[in-house]
Length: 340
Ligand code: PHE
Image (cartoon, rainbow, N blue to C red):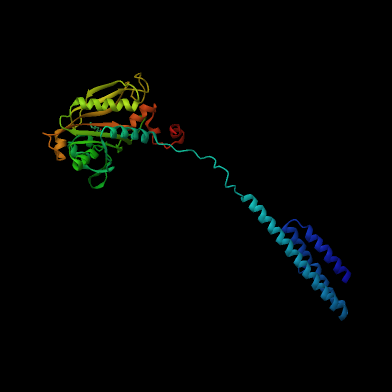
């Protein structure tokens, strides 16, 4: 019996050493140490032995059990170490590898042209002013000589909010705030986002950008206006553009004009952006209506001025030959990356 036990011990120890999976190891454990295992069977058979034999075999049985348990434990620890090594291998990070897939950002074309225009006007002595996008009726309409029954106040054009507030439909209210706060003489531009309750198509957005501006001084004339507008357009397009002036009506200017440029996308042939007319309405302008000056506390006998409203979004479309206004706010990287 003792020989059989010793043989069992050595064969078990070598099976443990050869086991390559946790499952194989567990199978050996159950087979040898389990309740119905080989050592249990030996211990059952011990009843047939004499008391001296039983003492000897019992002692040997314990030794075998202990050594098998220790071997199992040692092999299990080896498995765990191997698993850990594998995991660390898989998780290994090389902190020195250059990051892949990053792309440098770029300014949105609207921001880019806005900054160019700001730089230009800054160099001509104009202040750049900012104002709220949520405006009150007074600054968006009344102070600009737009009476309550004017079509511009029609529900169709304006996003009305509660309490007489609205989303500004142009950046002219910033000019009103500029006149109120700074007084004459004044040279300012107001770039910003404006909102109109329009249905969206290739050339209309409910949200777009403008740069409006004004100059108030003594003896300001239409000649001054034309000079500044020509300087502006030459700088923006970096080439001679064909313009035309038409009379235009805006309650806050008198006389008022529409400055159009020949469509730079189709060169006047006709395309969706110019609504097949060959001309793009770019720049309404005029001499500031004396009522507007007075409303903001400026003496219209002493001071006069010109004002203009530049469609920044449309300007960007002309400059980069973008044929659908919806690209600009699409957030589509295929579009945006072209400006990187
Ligand atoms: N505020 C006008 C608009 O948004 C533009 C404009 C400004 C017209 C200044 C004339 C003079 O439509």
